[in-house]
Amino acid sequence: MTSKQDGGGRIDYKRRALLKALPIAGLAVVGSGSAAAAPAYPSVIPLPTGFRPEGIVTGLGTEFFVGSLAGGAIYRGDLRTGEGDVFVSPSEGRVAVGLSHDARSNYLFVAGGPTGMAFVYDANTGAMVADYDFQDTGTFVNDVVVTRTAAYFTDSFRPSLYRVPLGAGGQVPDQSAVEEIPLGGDFTFTPGAFNANGIDAPPNGEYLVVVNSTAGLLYNVDPATGDATEIDLGGASLTAGDGILLAGRTLYVVRNQLNLIAEVRLDPDATAGEVVDVITDPLFDVPTTVAGFGNSLYAVNARFGIGDPANANYDVIRVSK
Image (tube, rainbow, N blue to C red; front, side, top):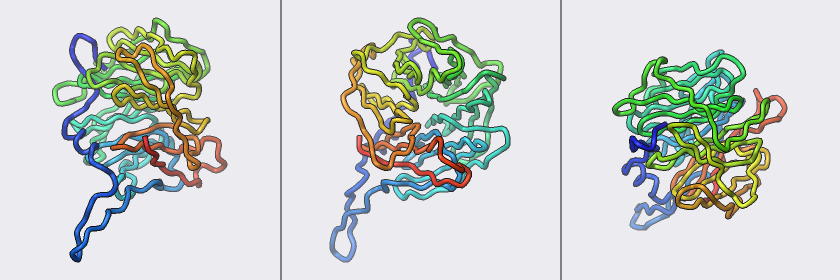
């Protein structure tokens, strides 16, 4: 998280941009004197049985990570092959909800849900780098975005953001540096309901975008003060809004129980927008969060409400933007 004055922004490096701009299908390979199209990236990526996924984020290259509500495990896979395995083992008392990745340090930031905590892992080794205790009770630390100067976390049960300042190269601080920033201005808070959920930021970090699941509203939030300005959607509602992904002036909002992703076109200052499309797929089964790669979106199926989640099948679904 960052202030308007210090020029911070969401991590967005040229190397990652070049990698993610490459076509994900139709690459030519030569063999036996003829060219053949390479297989398309898989449309369905299976996750371990009983994994109970919630958050997803891309890392370096074609790497992706998915967090688990069951013990806070982290799965690391490859979008190109669809293969992967559990990268961080589950641990009693941990939960993994929203994820964000910092390419400078190659650290993975994880929102800890009802634990009131956040966890930071080395995305190369899986080792824990740091953990932070935000709240002890009445909390659900839901999502996170990393900018050049800070990581910002939402709390669905409290009208606050948590700021973890970052040093040179994305180095993380100790617990004493953590700040709680009250959400004010137009922000609507309903006690006992899920409020602030998904969060993202533009490359320059001038503002944060936050969705309120219960109110169905989007906010443009000043990262320094927490002052929230409702983004005028012309009367459209985004209830059940969960994870979000900001790509230029296009914002993708996952509406979990409705099994769809709303595509919102924002105006240049992100104070107004219009829902211009709805993306869905027959394979969606309560998607919660979304990551982008090339011309595709990857939504993780959380399958909330399914019987026997410990033995259920879970997956990630690829759809076109």
